[in-house]
Length: 161
Image (cartoon, rainbow, N blue to C red):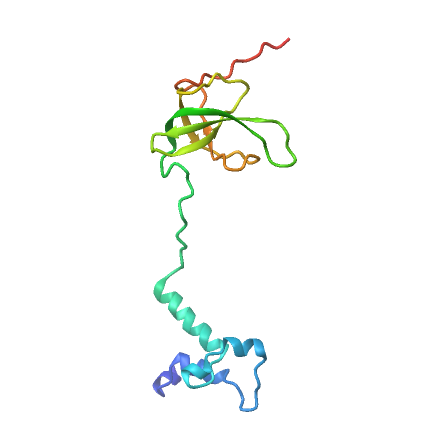
């Protein structure tokens, strides 16, 4: 408390404790980041940290605003009309063909959707429900069709023999 009665502040005492000696030569890395010339005096790393800590205290935590990467906006599902059935080739280590469809969605986007499961009967002009879910080994396929809704039936189980 003595230093407050004498007229010192916390910031000025912190700077004076760690101030540079007169014969000190800063390495080139610190010269790049020192703002002494702009402020009119030598500025130490500690004083910059105290300033930025004060700023962090004032403004609160930094929250980065992330762009929404959902291809359907904020909707979990979308209805669409099949324009074309496609067979996509997967990326390098995999080799099976992926059954996909080109769908015109209700939000007027045209996107490729993957058909999960074995077998399908989709043709042009069929109605499908798509959900968000990418296929890792097919670039550009960010949607999956929902089985058992509209014109895409459930997978027919093969009898076990």
